[in-house]
Length: 475
Image 1 (cartoon, rainbow, N blue to C red):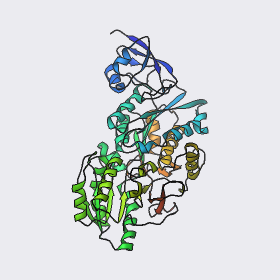
Image 2: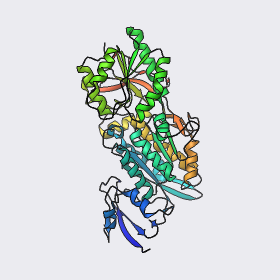
Image 3: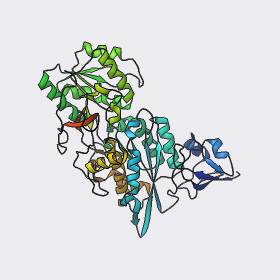
Image 4: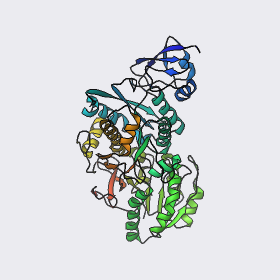
């Protein structure tokens, strides 16, 4: 077998953006190496992993012809003094609202004392390198960029956020490749069962923190009960569950939860993401006298549904929505129709928690974001920040930050006080999953911004103070 050596310039972003370059090399022969690769990788596996982008070549065109993706960052486990962390989020596409604070958080983390100074083990200092990638809100793209991070950048850990469309394929690739991974902002059932896990089983390399359908219930049910006490409603709940990982997780667990709470369950049907006409579903909800509405759709789908519902006269007394209307940008498309829609909040400036990296408060993080960007705070500030708190703690606790199994074990057994609150990955509900408790919030006219999120129910997390009054979505 002949060998070919190709020099490559590696640019700043996995999604092909332009930035400062770092030189590296690839040698094609019986196996592929880049500097001292962690392990031999076959040519076919490498090409599958890096398909979908373009690289700048020095002295040859072979990689461009094969579709190599441009990269951000240098080092990796081939550089013993560098810890590479990959970050995958939906910076574009239908779920881009989740990634609004990415640039701010990544700059803040890179400049923090913890990450800029690195960690010292056995007299040796390890420096951190964070490599970001855009999933484009597409599961296939999420898989592709994660393979790039692992096979080209040799990341020691991947952190990822924002719905099963990104978090699940990222975790699947990491589990298959033996690379530690931490995910957040995805219901744990959609992440766990949606990836084919069975009760009693556990993943070796992949972990996550967020909450699940039971916690949504603990957040939403008290608000239903309070509105029922105010208005003596028909206790019938319209449920809008798509045929995807989130929707199927709710469909599997919520009929029993709703019945146990004393309400009647009405399922609008397992529709496909991207549906544009919801007339049949709306008619079903109206015929059943549904005074409550809950969901877990993609944001554009909910916007279409909610406008059609208003036009067709479906105006539930209380809407408690999941996966949508989590961020200020989501309110723009609906305008006044967003008034008093309730949702869950896993992080706000009112949360009493502090950073494990520097002790700063949740309010300080939100204020800094607003001052730096001119944008309204968003709750993904806290969850994205905490991904890097967890990553830092795992590497700090491991004796060898390049030992994937040891770092993964640190993640599965970690107990950490974070800016999102206490995170206990060993406590479950399944190994490697840490639960954070949400609060109930409503969108109301704001003082400094058109619409603001107010905490109206803290039944699930009394540590967070209430600063708004629960009101009907429609009367």
